[in-house]
Image 1 (spheres, rainbow, N blue to C red):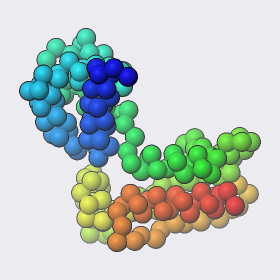
Image 2: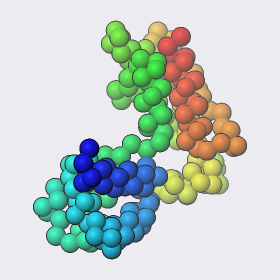
Image 3: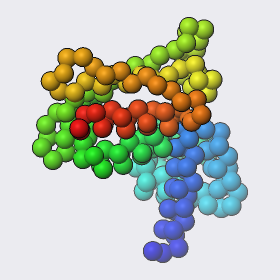
Length: 183
């Protein structure tokens, strides 16, 4: 791999790391763009955006355009840590998901459904619009409703471990849900 390509991939890794933390990290992305301009790597950034995110760099007229117009596209193309972990889980269990349906990868037979339901504490109803704040204060929890094909009553997964992160709680629920559907 040539030196130019390594630089492109290194910048992609930096952008992906920032984007994986969520859409609210746009300021960190803006600072990265500024740093790359200062270090004369702006052109490498544009190439990285083109190769890794399929962002049309011809339409970007300024550094401010790059900052403001690319962040949404980057976020759309970036898988968060939870999504990456769920993909690994699905690959191990040989299933995939379309909408709410969980399907066996080998037979293409529907195993059941998983539905996410947001639950808020009574005092935090006003936080519904600010999900990130509700997540941080742990006043928003997601319940999984799991229904195996052939069963009438869904299994409700609503446990929450305050000693781990919100994402880890969600992952643990998905592990339980997938195990229920594949057993």
